[in-house]
Image (cartoon, rainbow, N blue to C red; front, top):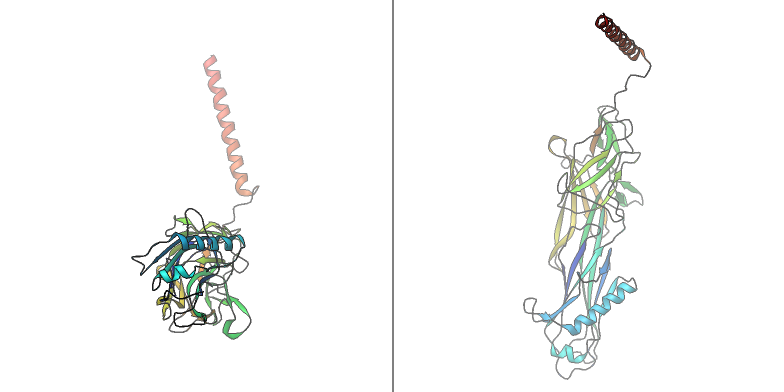
Length: 376
């Protein structure tokens, strides 16, 4: 069983992925009867997509290069996926192919191509999405047609900033990650040993709520990112944090402030955001899609900060790493407080008012004096 797809590691909410599931047909002799054979595929964090732009395609042949489209199996697979969509189910099964087809195609492969959309709703810093392919079959030497079972899965991940680490260090508590914190220009911040716990350094900066940001893809004026709900504007909370989920790794994003907190001037400097993930090889699928860790890089140059995380694929838990060798710090995005304007009616405005009146009186006097001279 060999499931593959076009976007193995990094995906965003709303992305439509192409999946390719390849299953071997055992060598059956012509006298075999009532052969058991079925292919099942199950999604996690994804929904099936079936339309004119995203059709189901099934090929049968000795290998991927020589396999040809097979309308018979394609019709069965398409109906199974459509039934799953209608029933809002997360799996489909291709079965009842018949002895005649299986014997005629012994030692060949069935290759099923279909599409699914990323729809996971988990608000965590790492969101894992899978598709699991299963094959149940009877082999040629088993006269009782007992079912043999094979399964494998393909893994997908999205990431976030200022989201949640659950089960931190074996506890049941959750902590915000806090890679980005909105502050005034009076000082700096850094992490403690626990994710999300930020201390103030070199002054007493205030955490600023109500700042609005958009996240652009690829460049500061690139396409605007939207999360799974369609939201494309993100607002800092009372702790100065944003919450943005569903980001790809290996993609440059740019946070751009579109509205400053009340009483502060707009900071027009874009903040570069990049998630760099590391993966290990899965020996069962031969795909390098086992997440082992990642880092969130914020800003550029001297202002750049990095937060480091390890990831346990068995438990799905994230380990916040903040050591001398891998120091982690949040990015403190600063705003400057607006300068107070002079109050109306003060001494400054009075002087200007009196001066203006005097100029008007002198101008009027000169005007009438010139008129008298002209009459004479």
